Image (cartoon, rainbow, N blue to C red; front, side):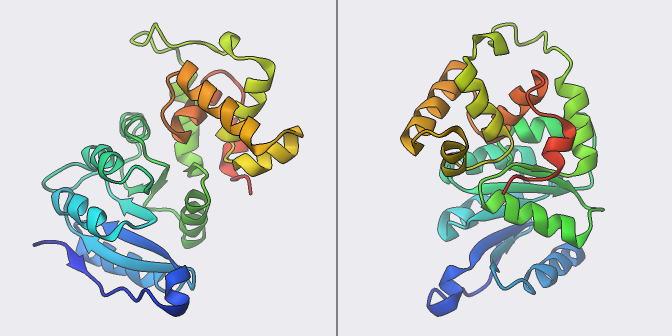
Length: 239
């Protein structure tokens, strides 16, 4: 089996660590990434896989908080992997770490359900920022990817004529949607708007159902397309 598992200590301080799974077929890159992340006190590498096929079973067994995956993988592409992971572990966070920077790949990954997209030429600081932002429930796009997303999603999508527009969103729903797109938690949104967390949850559920948005990344894309957030807003995750 191509997946390499590492023992996990579930006791003591280790239990508090965010457990990660790495999916990368290039050994040098995978080992370098593991070495970098193992220096962080709040992160733990629970397992590794060299291909998209073994990665699904690995995530099913380990139930990690975050999967970091490339797009170009043997056996099953990273895009397909994202979709599979969304089925077997709906709550898992997914960060794409890749050299592919075309709008086509970015769009496909976000549509599949990725929570973040970072290029392999990113700095250590930016990668760690992305990981922690995503683990806290935010969406993270590196600066160059943000520019492509904004450019692509500001153009009308003729193949999706049934998608509702911003005019179907009420004023309060717009406020909630904008805050969700910026990565704010329900608790922070409730505090900012002076309402209860349950009210925010209700607005959020209504929005996602009304606009056919299935995850935070989709909410972010909708907000970009309709001018509710800007590239500058997205480059700095909301705490």
